[in-house]
Length: 327
Image 1 (cartoon, rainbow, N blue to C red):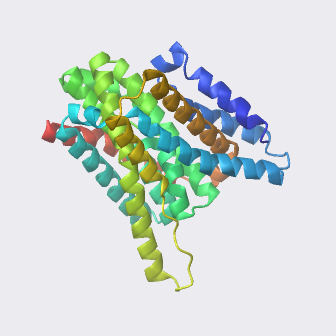
Image 2 (image 1 turned 90 degrees about the horizontal axis):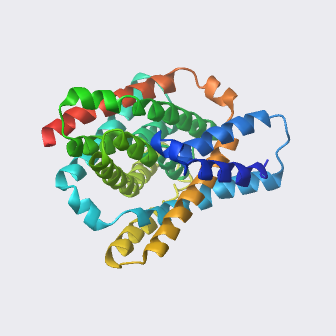
């Protein structure tokens, strides 16, 4: 199965760079997941060798972390300052609300597992599938939980693209202000580009910067989740329980943002770093897709869909109200 990994990754990566894909918000990461799922299920009856499994796990974990670190090259502190302090407050408010509501609804009201609930919530709150895979190691979640979380985030993240133009026409917001709203509520970076383009260039620019600001917040979010989850496990399990691994790679992401801000790197270097980050993340998402089985998603039932649909509505509706309060 591992032979399909580079082929699918390259197809997804190159397809996402076409004008059609960029105009319609078809990013390399969601496309890699979808293609990986299709191929993985077509090859479901094929035996998975130890070599294939090792390569898929390496891609899904090691390459993902390297990609997230390099993704810091997309952002500078100057860009953050340009959209104002309100955008940072809005992002933090959206993330904290979605995570809190998601946990209460999923665990306490729907009776879902903690790991599955947190993965769905963090994927909705921060940056889609990449956030799910970044959080998975600190939860030691099952592959089924990861697959279900990614599937629901891809579905509702795509659905959001059709909602933003309609909301813009009834919102009476300026394109600049609406771009900030898009960035604070959309799931994926590529979707921020597409949704912003549907309005105008100023909306797209603000959407991308605010979205990247949310991506940057993945670092503290994963660290906080790791600390809270470790404390919960310590309180409920025996002293021999294994420690939850800390996501040290998020500090690499922050360091890359700072480095990119302090040093005026040549454009070819920055472009190489950004392309490398996108390619590594695409390979990681392909590996995830290849390990996602329809049977696992079906077995999860309707609760994950209900949770994701609620968080999707909260992002669009609650995010708009929070935007109005701050702006």
